[in-house]
Structures are given as C-alpha cells and as structure tokens.
Amino acid sequence: MDHHYIPQFYLRPWLGADHKLQEFRRGYQGRIQTGRYGTKSTGFEIDLYTLPGVTEATKQNVEKVYMGLVDGNAAVVRDMLLDGRIPHDQGLRHTWVRFILSLILRHPEAVAKFKQRY
Image (cartoon, rainbow, N blue to C red):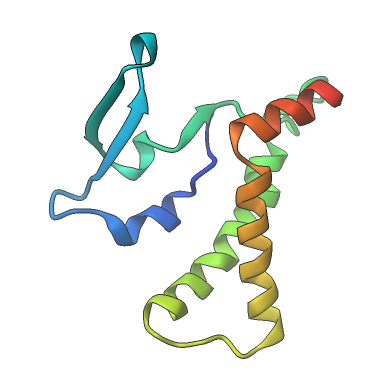
C-alpha cells in the first residue's frame, strides 16, 4: 500500500494547470531527477507505516485510522488558512498542530528509526 508521508490533500493547492507537481528526487548515483507527477505519485513510500507482526486486518491501521483522522481534520483547517480565515477555535488550532507534528514523525527516516527500535 502506498503510504504518503506528504499527504495528498496538502499538495493539492500547488498543482499546476496540468494537475501535477514538479518533483525533484535523487536518482541513480545521486543524480537529481525531475518530473511532473500527480499527488498519488509523489511523497509516498510503499508500506511505510505497515506494522510488522500483527494481523492482516490491522497491519494498515496507522495509515487508515491514525493518519486518516489527522489528515482529514487538517484538510478543513488548511482550507480555512488558504481562504485567509484564522481558526480561533482551540480544537481547530490543535488539529493543525497535530498535523504539523505528524509531518515530523511520518517521514521515512523517522519511521525507519522507530521500526528499528520497535
């Protein structure tokens, strides 16, 4: 399963007229490669959050349950911010902070360290 460490909803406001993003990545021998990609094709790693040693039914729970909840709620706040509205509600502010903190914890290097310790 593709697990997006840069959530698709977060990337959408920066799509070009072709509905794609400009992506830069390190390729063969560290060379920089660039291309145009849709949100489904960038900012992900296969099975990044898959939990080892659990049942088939629960191994995707980090992505489906936790990240889904964090990202779904943050999309509402992101829309407010892009519309120039400042969320004054403490719950909405906490939602945005939770999302920003998740970006620190969900990238591949942090997840790899966590899995090593786990």
